[in-house]
Length: 200
Image (cartoon, rainbow, N blue to C red):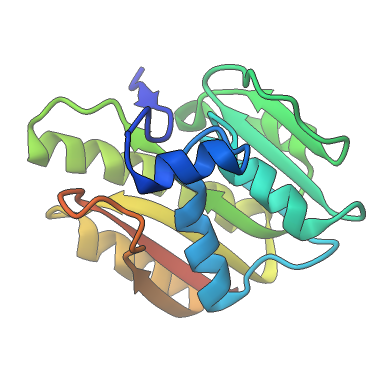
């Protein structure tokens, strides 16, 4: 079974300091904030699925955006240690081995599916990119099954030889797509986000 790691850990920089002050578990929240400011994907009352939700920053921010009438469901390999609001739920599961029981738990008709998953890195760029592609494929498969028509999909991928292949897969399932590199991403990072709008 392939393992994947949680979102960015412990970087001591402007964004990590800001995250601590604003009570977010990790600096990764600012990537989603940039995406939201540019594209306004998450709205009040929406149902959101956050894949690879540990340590919880994206989930907490998504809850703020959806409000009390919304619902945010987070999924990760390990339980979250942060306190979550009443309109959020967390499930422990391996994204790479999802079954029908998972879909029965989460339900369907999500307005937005988020994936900030990253593989457990090896230092070998091609291996890491291939592992990232596998996670992205799994996330897209979930989106195809339970994202409502007209819904949006945000997925982090490591740039590598499979990048264009994944972009084509997203283009095939959505009316529009965009590639987005947040300013809050580290300059040396190979991560980039592919966003699908208006699911077919």
